[in-house]
Length: 632
Ligand code: BTN
Ligand code: 3PY
Ligand code: ZN
Image (cartoon, rainbow, N blue to C red; front, side, top):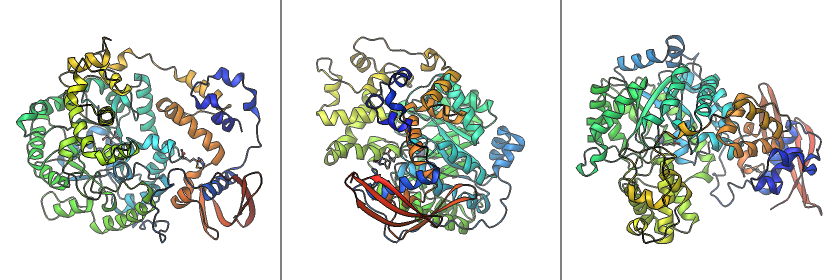
């Protein structure tokens, strides 16, 4: 097949291919017969069974008794929920309704931040889609279900071999009464870099069309100027625009006066003026302490007049106290995760918040029995992903030192491990804090948090202290991401970049202070579609594919190449996807609504002289033999 040859061609692997390369390289066009989807899926299972999945090799295995999780039965037709209000009366009516509630509204983050923070974002769509009807029927009082955006977009293509848009479409269909919610990094889309304005606009439009109702829009430097393009696009799509403040520092600490009450109120007013329907308060590292939450939420409510939606992480172990303080202070909505996906670097436990508020004037009205049933389902789901557990065993008060976001903490630890720095983690934590101060004490959240992390790892690996890095006499080769940030390519932080370090990093080059998107030419969308279609041998590129490609060109192309080989592997049970099958195992995969494959593994044969293993299946009762290279 064309794409397989292309993806394995050294020029492609080197990232130096062009369309001309395709025209001048005839060996790409040795087509094999196109195989049907069932054969493709069997090929995937055979390959994983013989060779293992590269991502689970050497990692802890799920317990032997782990079974495909079964979702609780939906108890009735879904009652009307927030989505119905949005559809009937629009986003402003949702915001007005929020402010009129006495109860605390709850967002469930399990399907996005929960697994992003605990399982390296590896949860597969099938495990979400199975339980979505139970959410719609049994928890219709939820404010929203956060299930898209952030890191989930590229991880779906890159590691899970599935289309993130299809995930969204399926979840939307399964929860018609509940608002879906996504995390959007403003001009950075769901990526790590600033995109041209028309790419951001197209992405928001498509997300709204495919199924996002609430957009939590933030900027990694809290620069409202750089949030407008994304916010305007959300408002244009008639969806809920949650303009968001990222919380950092320590509100009540006079030594961290850069981020004081005045700063947050000022930013909140800017977000309101920019058209936010809801004010998001995003405490991505879990730094907001209970007493500070009381002051901050009360003041924002009084001074701004928008409903406030609070998000935090339980890295310190004290997040539930902060949420309850925020509830006392009048917060309108809060985020929490189901038991099995809560705590640690994730959100606090949803059921426990619900019970803590029970019989108070802020009672959420959510059914604890329904929560328990759904949570039991999630417990079985989590067990399947043992390979992706980070192993953080206890709360970490160290978070107040480094201020790493929940999603980054375990990731950076893994990176440190791969560089042989695991034993020196306390130094990494200190270097992260030092790098932050060196950059002027900035907001740290994707992508700015990655830059600080890159700097910190470099400092520890090379034994450089902050004062050495800052010393004009000491030669330092800065990470690319640091150079890029100092150039102004992620935007401007509160108070600007410190002149000394910026000058040293840029070696005399002049930084930009304008909004990065201002200097970027719009992408010709139709020309891109045509080029992409040609690169994919005439494949019809729809708007979702085009937007996926615009965010992550290489990741998307790699996904497409594997898709042509392996077909709709998103329909496989998670155990099969990561571990293949044992002789005697039987599974089903619904590749289209109503079209189900029944697959039984009979045996794995010997590997022949040609290095290929024969794998014997029964597919819907008929014998099938698949040959795959044995790379083990
Ligand atoms: C990856 O991106 O590496 C994970 C996606 C699955 C890749 C498939 S798994 C079977 C085959 N063997 C490999 O090493 N890669 C592909
Ligand atoms: C993301 O951008 O993915 C985040 O979760 C930031 O907190
Ligand atoms: Zn978060």
